Amino acid sequence: MKIIDLTLEHEDLIRQAAYLYIECFPYTEWPDLETVIEEVKVSLQEGKICRAAVDDDGTLLGWIGGISHYGGNVWEMHPLMVKVDMQRKGIGTALVRDFEKQVAERGGLTIWLGTDDATQATSLSGVDLYDNLWERIRDIKNLNNHPFEFYKKLGYEIVGVMPDANGIGKPDIYMAKRVKDVR
Image 1 (tube, rainbow, N blue to C red):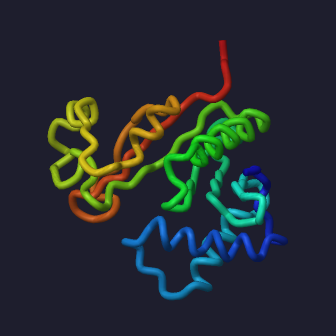
Image 2 (image 1 turned 30 degrees about the vertical axis):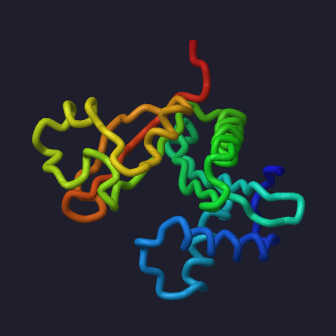
Image 3 (image 1 turned 120 degrees about the horizontal axis):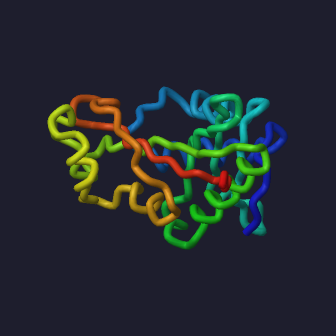
């Protein structure tokens, strides 16, 4: 496996990335494949980071993107996707570590991400998060393989939530990590 920049010249990888979007987010209703391809291309715009993990045959295993905020001090990780049959094999970790390196090389200090709970996979879904919010965050439970624990293992911390981001009782969980030592 190697990690490369994903660019507009990689038409086959862009198409594979679009199919991966559909595979990884089956609860999202896309009108057609061309719409998803255009969504992938948004990640390839100037000033963004977009990296792809590919095998020796040129098959896309996963990809990650990033958007600069706050004058480059903070980068949003969006998206991160790994083929379902290739998950738990270190590809996501490799992509995140590569992304962290890319951000640090650009002078970024912090990476943040939102990890939706649109499928009631954590104890933060299906409840009123306006009631005892910080206690609920502190006591979060993973009910159905939600990726927040993957990010925690990589050093990301929950820094907040957006209640009802994906509908009533379906929050977005915000996580962040400092990637540059500022001491």
